[in-house]
Image (cartoon, rainbow, N blue to C red; front, side, top):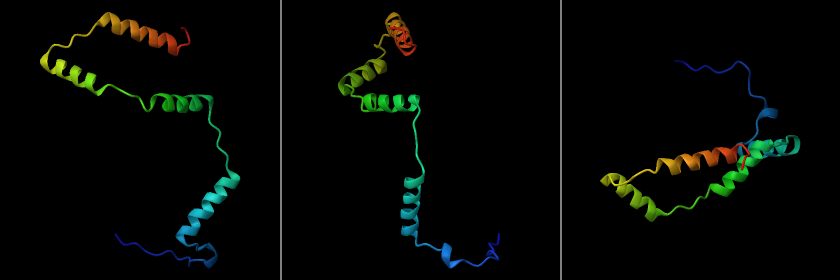
Length: 95
């Protein structure tokens, strides 16, 4: 495949050094463009901040992993169902 040049010569007024182009583009956007987040996006951002750095107990994870591998891990289906229903109710706004 052959790459051919364009018939239009480069115009000196359109040539900007790479570093200057990025700076100029940022200034143009900063001066003319505004971004407004929806309520849902703002809430998502808040939740990511709140839960994004979730702490967990590595020791407990290792114990559960070993119990699963050894076949000793038992799931309490009633407790899982209760917590799932509680979570759904909370998400729907019914506490």
